[in-house]
Image (cartoon, rainbow, N blue to C red):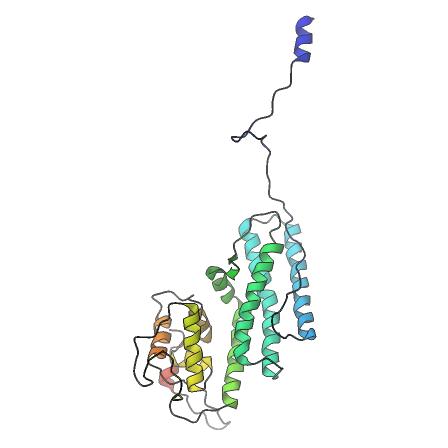
Length: 295
């Protein structure tokens, strides 16, 4: 009897201890990690109608993301892929609105302002995706110190939405170039692509090591020749999307496209402009410059 009483009054075993001395608690990542997205805050003029269309696209993308989350268990990789798709869907609507505003001549909108503003919205969407699609889970590192990571930007650039935006942008830039034709055979005398470079000879002083330097080099080229970036891309025999990737250092170091772009800038090679064609006769636009665009 005494033995039985002693057993009843004996203390309960202690809970298992972790290495640090705290009680061991099982930790699990929540299945539902989605929170409502917030409206984008634009640092540039953007009409109320355009804001509404972009916000509607965000809410629809939120709804579809939540449906995917509730219908199956998402791995971290699957959730990250859905976040990229979420960004691309909304980006497509913003890019379409941006190109329309620039095409219509809306105040403070122009083809040259469209591309940096699209890039800024990509950054805002990536930050939103991190904050609203991984609540309580492991963040996917879509950004690094507030900027979109290069590999993430490369994934976005491979999407069909990005390709459609690039196609619209090329048309917009060519339309702008056609409305301001340059009849001079060479570049303006007061501008040069590379600091200290002669306009008629290659220069070793061109420095393309930073994104800012690459953007400045392209801007100087288009200003000097009074042409679009698409005209530079045709001279370098690359797609305009590849020129955008080059500016962001997303082309491989050994890429032939990278080498052709930098050669065109260093040598200050003339732009390859589109030639307007009549219904009865078609004039080739410098076939030697535009052949093998994808090579």
